[in-house]
Length: 102
Image (cartoon, rainbow, N blue to C red; front, side):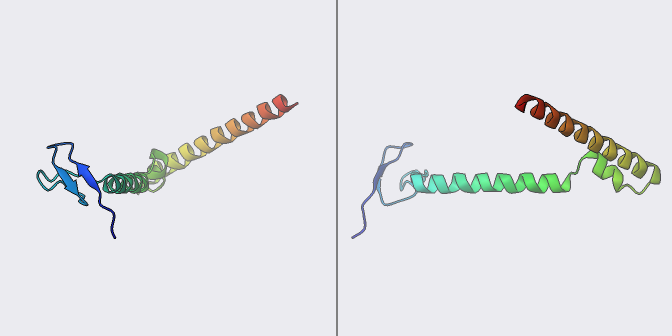
């Protein structure tokens, strides 16, 4: 025998039995359905973020693919500068960690 769930609608106060939506005002009252919708929204937000990052590369990546040769050179120079600064930072962080470790 199925379990009877009686849920009071927070919007209109009507008691509903085994329903996801209120029979009176059509408000979502199922906690399980609310969790499912929230999880779905979180997944969709992550997908949208990934699509945005893929379709909107940073300035250096856009310049590296530019049709004008001068802009491509500037893009590669900027990319190289970013890479060198990152390597220096990583080396500095490693050095500090080694000094701190003794």
